[in-house]
Length: 253
Image 1 (tube, rainbow, N blue to C red):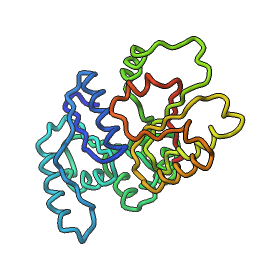
Image 2 (image 1 turned 30 degrees about the vertical axis):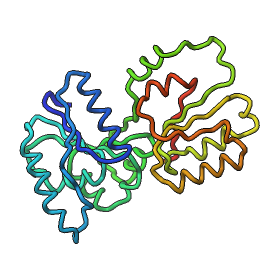
Image 3 (image 1 turned 45 degrees about the horizontal axis):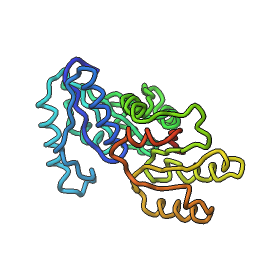
């Protein structure tokens, strides 16, 4: 990061959460970091009359930053507006953070990533996809993260037995197919695994309602309603971590 301000352009779902945690981590490291709250970026379609005003808002936002700043975009839509609004030379550095593989297959995205900003990709599978479709473009792979302080606070909230016996398994994942919660439930329901755990608690927003219902039906079919719970999104992450023995963050993306 630069020594100037680091601004994270807000997106949605996983990108937004990553951006917020990143801002917190930068502040903890002594950086001047903030979130762009009011850019209002509509779908970037040629027929959408709201696009040009959004490009102008983004251009004003960028022109108001210190040239030594770094702007981090967390969603393909944010990347598109940053590409359209950024000056062709000068201005703050741009980092495009890709959280999924799908954009690697989009022609416009590949065009932009070849010509604009630095590309950071979350996870090894996604990084391989971008590297394969963007030969010659430097792709920096990083992993998603939970604040280390969450774990420290969780440890302070419980006393672990030296023999935990059957495990309480916690899962943190949005309920969408790419996160793999359904596959994880099939794994823990295997007869060889059933005797090793006491409960599975899945914490995550029901981003895909039909997928969440499918998981609920599968839990019922397996006769595990009393052992597997979907508790939705959790705000107090340390408290959730303090209540489990093992944390699983699944992904099939």
